[in-house]
Image (cartoon, rainbow, N blue to C red; front, side, top):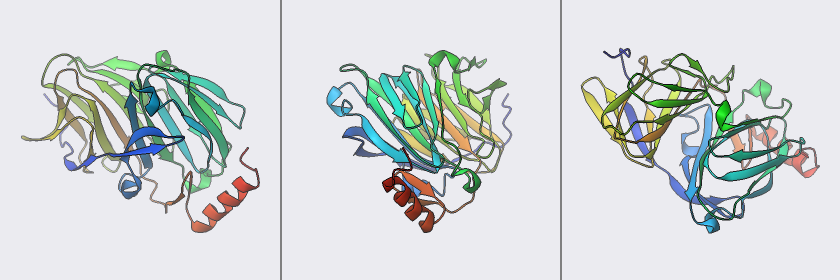
Length: 287
């Protein structure tokens, strides 16, 4: 019997746009500028995945950030992080790199492999206005540090942030309250996963293996591979029913309801703050 009394529906399905970033890394921009207000506090989501070194080998040389957090989840591959705050870490299979840019820093993310598969996601998570100029911060979370729970139906849940089925995630954030789950469904069709969500939190699901249905009452909406389902607000949670061996990420967060002003790698609240960010970068104040 379902513990979700009023499940969310699919508001729209989004197909990501193929693009290049960094020094020519091929990726799919799933959550773009057009959805920033709708999916507040999430600013961007990129998916990358290739076994062709030419698609990723050039990496992301030094570049600046200010005003938000970056969360990189590496499903497969090895990438070295270095930043102007003196932090360095190796992001590898199943690990997460969580960086708070705050008042600003420069960093690089460079592959440490010349062949094989590199696959994962990078999320941009906004900071509230009062924290946009906070002290930069960084944490490497190795795969074994990410809490996991297996539901009674056999779904393995990697809890990167937030909470699921009584398991606290590796990260918690007070103002945006992000939920970041990586779901691994078993080798059986029609297995159901449920997740309670606050009614006001914005949420979405992205499928990167297989396919699933978002179930609401007697109805269901299919979400195929490489599609993001933006979910309606309201109700008390989410119900998914998946094909065998489906993998998907679920994200939800508390909206900040503040103005969003973005210029490239800087995300502030006003144009004037963006001008200041550019000036500070040019003056060498971001490392």
